Length: 538
Ligand code: F6P
Image 1 (cartoon, helix red, strand yellow):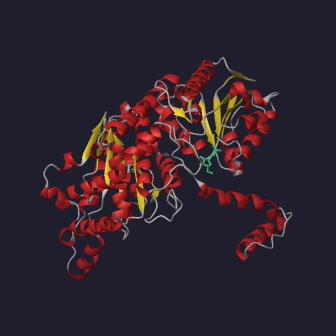
Image 2 (cartoon, helix red, strand yellow):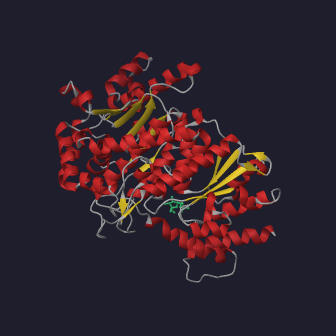
Image 3 (tube, protein in one colour):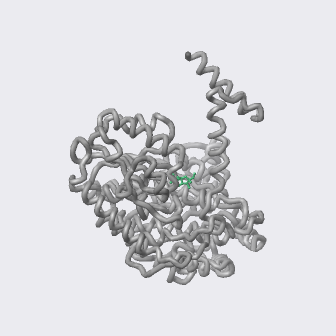
């Protein structure tokens, strides 16, 4: 497969993209998928119809459909941890039974959701009080999946907020805590400690700091703490009573967890009804993923386009470019979703991966990115496949011109990437600008865009809770499809453990309690340099 893919990719590079449109009038329609108010356009890629058929055949041969059904039915597809993968069950509370090792998990999911709703209603109505009265601010303490999902979605849904203000504390850098706590009234602040494991160093350090901050003015700080966790023994040890612990099963991975208790801040911000619409949007994408034939299936085709760019064309990164300011944290969210899921070195059976693992994912919202890194995207020597995301309607009815400009910019970028500007066109432009001779040649060369640069565009009507749910579920399933086809486990994350272990071991070295002779010279020198600064600082 690898060889065939590479050969196809090489031929596609020579062929380019525009000729595919010239040879196929129906290309725009044939290379797009519409589903429930969302259009995925992948016509501006190098994929020919034959290439696409080959990719779909690969997906069939890799068993994407079988694996997908195994996930939805609660089988233990996270084989390295012996766990089911059922974040999809969180967003389908009305769904039928799903058994994990002979036990139906739906009652516990429904029960927790009902408790979350009751709690959120009390906070929002002002009947759950802090020492100083109603809750005006919420601080969600968490990191990774216990941070990025809540922060990204709360920001995305700003239009729908009618609850307390939400703040997100994640970094162990004390500056994060200081900046967030500054200006908050501890007596009217609710603290959410979001940690599946309830052992994560950053989160537990921040939780203790915030508890101390609150204890300065509040007699019983624990009364204003809530825990979102799977580790009930640890939440109890921290002092949070069971009625303020919202738990979830080990079948929900951290980066897939915003649909359940980890989404509590989103529910507090916009209310249980809007949160319900968010879940419904996710469930609707699940249904599409389960039912649509592979070639008409949005997550499958998004996954196949990603693999095509990475594996066949050899493009090492992928830019996520939301033309939506409120989706500013989406690239960071997708970075964890994709890179923690598919950045693996071995296949499920432990043998080395035969292809490059998932791509580097990065991005920023447009139009800001245009004035920063798009230079490289248009003219740099490395091709970066771009994924544009934009809503047809803006969220500010009084500022429609802003939205027209946003859309024009978004569509212009994908057009420019594909079309480019030839040397002759550049020469003509420079001639019109009054240049001639060698100077014209020199100037024209700088103004050439080679074009033939691929992108996909996702357009939807407007950014509502329902659409946001669809959008996130779409990307989750895309990552799933890519993972199945790479033959890896997308649901573990052993790669983050070594650094954590070594950080724990370095603490006493920094404190001067351990000379750490076994450490390499560079690490010892860095520690010595810092300790010297501390010593001189007194
Ligand atoms: O270290 C990585 C990780 O385990 C992520 O997978 C997870 O989202 C994050 O840390 C936070 O973990 P927890 O919710 O257990 O604090």
